[in-house]
Image (cartoon, rainbow, N blue to C red):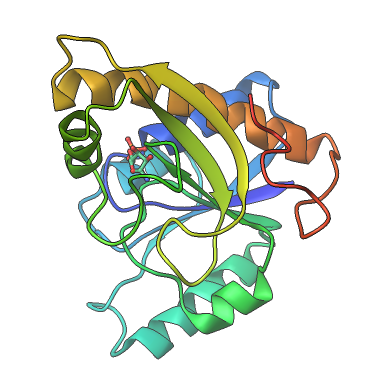
Length: 207
Ligand code: GRF
């Protein structure tokens, strides 16, 4: 499977997947990194790894439709089979969503459908989990549709909330689990598990 990544910031999840490709744990090849942030860690990591990378944003394109078509063109040019969102802070456009339907995955730092949606990103998610008094949080890998954090859930892994957790300590423990869960889920997809789609019941990959 040829993987393309879209990432806006640090790119630690992307790095975990790239490391798994490099070590042979994951039978995938990273072919492209796209970022909407010229200064992102993700673009720096791509350069270090020798993976083709490109900055595509509303600075490089005049509107969301032009940006959508540029993203799709880049994905197709590099032969991406799957699109891996790794902290990508924009919604994908209709052309990209339609061309890669069922082959775009995202990771979210909570147990969706709880604590997802607009505004639920970064430390906000962990603040909300603690404020709600949850006993556990976790990470979710899901297919991407036109809504934030909304598509079919492929895999979840739980992380206990500890009595003395701060949003930061919880975020770090969840992030460690995200790195493992993203690699494991992509490995299952690459190993020819049933392709995601309506035939797979919710929670098929629940663990
Ligand atoms: C992760 O928490 C991920 O779940 C969310 O954005 C964050 C990205 O972190 N979608 P990183 O850039 O992979 O370090």
